[in-house]
Amino acid sequence: MKLNLRGHTLDLGRRTCIMGILNVTPDSFWDGGKYASAEQAIARARQMAAEGADLIDIGGESTRPSGQSVDAREESVRIRPVVEALVASLRIPISIDTRKASVARAMLEAGAHMVNDISALAFDPEMADVVREAGVPVVIMHMRGVPETMQTLTTYGDVVMDVRRELEARVEFALTKGIKPENIVLDPGIGFAKTAEQNVEIIARLDELAALGKPILVGPSMKSFIGKTLGLEPGDRGEATIAACLMAAAAGANIVRVHDVAGVAKAMAMFDLIRHSGKSEKQQVGT
Image 1 (tube, helix red, strand yellow):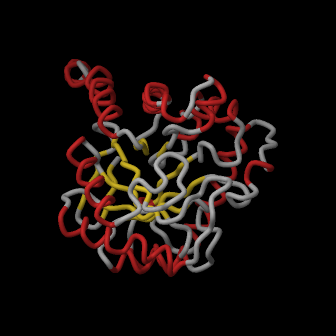
Image 2 (cartoon, rainbow, N blue to C red):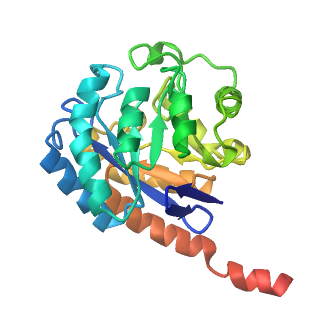
């Protein structure tokens, strides 16, 4: 399984890819304000690339439940200089974390390679057209409501089956809008309209979502479900994040979206080495 991003190719069958999170915002739950200036953000992206990131996901609006929404103009002002600098200087693709079509269009015109839409193309009616016209991959993430209301919408029958059905419906929507099947990536939306226990169950049963045949992206990094289940403050969730990423990869995740690129990349490299060790020899014997 390969993902083509405007001249970049991610071989998702060979190893688990690492997406580095770059929040160019003053209020993100983990690193709000730390990389709010263009200079700080650019330096952090270059550091993540050196640490092993396969792509960088840039966002200019916090989507945590208590985060403040911003208009498209402000969002674009925050991230444009970062996108332009990184497209010119990095050899890895750039993803844009936005639910606004005008922001996505502007950043794709600036050279970005992918769109990561937490609303699964539902927030902005023009987003699907922007993605189709650009011919880039799009991450369709499961969420109910909007960030301000999502944690009131956590009632499911079977959380994994319900998430699967709701993702399938958004995939069908994307296809009817002309987005190519090979350009669709699915994200179960860890932390979005789910309880802590539901997030854990989704990771444990991720193979049931991987069975849909689309690349799977999972973002458990430093999130509150770790704090609620293990009693850990945000600054102490690094090792638990690595464990969640490894379990997700074992269950079928192709891309993990993380803050701590260095730690996750090292752990995932060993995981993939062990997982694929001896496979080629076994395949040769069987031919």
